[in-house]
Image: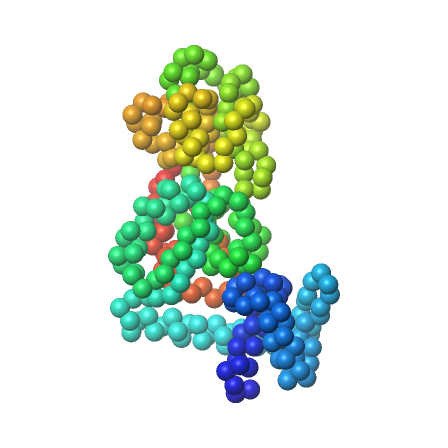
Length: 301
């Protein structure tokens, strides 16, 4: 094969095999699924072998497709590596990075570090999409995601960005004077709690304590909010108790606007982790961005 079109079709073949489907691969490559399907049919016709088993619900590699993928991937990865090495001849790395991230990570980790990243690497185009929902990273065209450790989707490579995080219950002094201060976890059942809906659309049970002394409490509450910033504002206004990262309310705790409830039941949880497709060559722009976020393994909890 000598034409650029053939090389593009081979790259499309690898993208489909990696993504596990035409629709996901098409989203990553910025083309239609029908165009990608047409390209693969043409490639199969030129090669004289079928590369994919196709059904109405799924695709899978044939034996010939598995052999071709195994032979091609190292070479295409080598091409990407060679292109990355060109960074040494530029002023710095370049490229595009598209990230999906939790709101808490955007506020605590990304926001403080992006200004210095932009000064150091002005040729890297950065797109950050803030969304607490679980998204199909591959089909929606993201290079990487950022979530709490332990919630990284299966089949992804996870890379720790921060140390463990501290979770606390907070309330305003006025609310606690009026409603009383809980002395043990089950006292929360008599309080108004601002509840959390997770990225999987389930109401979150508050996880208190560490090690052998751990308890989950399905707290009551008539307010369910999907944003930490709004929840913090509501708890400052005396609307109830809230369970959150201690770092998110550091200023309010320091000023006395909030106080920690049940301090002996604070909990440590896994820090923020980046995740990306396990069999994908990590582009230099993405690697540079993640390394910048890691820094000296920042303490957030």
